[in-house]
Image (cartoon, rainbow, N blue to C red; front, top):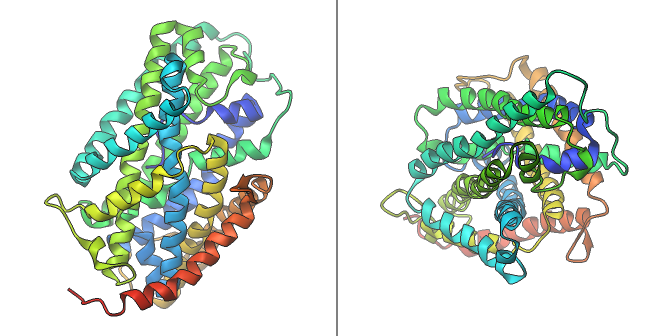
Length: 419
């Protein structure tokens, strides 16, 4: 749910150059991933409920803010989930450009959505096991790429590491880095479907943060040492790097890995987001229809509803999707850090198998850097346009819409039977 390997890092290199990109990938996990992992580790192990972060915020701040948390997360998902079919199409177009030209690209993206919808209907176990297999497959070409690149380097010189970028975009590079390191809280929404969540969530959060950073930094460092110019990198450029360093066979393998990345990220994230309408319906904030389960325990109405909504954003560009996603996701993440502090204060006796260290000062400090980075992402998105509106104004409208819809939702669901 957090990482599909190095795919998506190309724009960081192209916008900032190797040295700056390496610094971002090494530093930002300590300011962004680690604090979020600590927060999720505590709350997911203490409150392992279906719906995850929605349940935490509702319990800490009340049903109104719980609804806003779910609203912002689902709104962000509209743009986040469109990124992965877009990556699938971009990599397919590297080897078969005529297959993705015009409307064909949209049809391929739509096929990813439909395929993952059918996959998700088979349950969390099927999605989880396949995600591990796909991650190993898509990462294998990069193992070869790193070995070949280091062999060509031979320990002499610094390759292209010190080459400057003619028109650097540091703000854009930071935004892409944040996107590549976000999503730790998504795993929380399926807590009731996880074995021993009290023990497994903290281990998964902290272990994954380290693993993800390694899988990002090593390939980037290797191709820099091999001498590939940073200016040639944009989304999908890993294919060209593999072809230059090792030939067309590895280039084709990277293309296949990129397509698997699109499916492999979309599939588990679909599992995560679709538990939100289910949990909200359990709290009578959405129609009870969303609580219906199939024989695999999957809330199928929620899966189908979300798939339809996500399909509507498939034509946005990669960069625009990231900007919008960060702005909306940032609002929901801030609410989660607030919930962490409030629950520490209001429920000190709550059983917490894992605790953010440092007491209440440690809890407050944990949320400082992620909040500052979210503020930076909002500033960086100031020039982005969504439906003709500035991205920040669009985000404000989305947030206010959630506040207006909440009383209407309460009114429409008030007369529903409890069972």
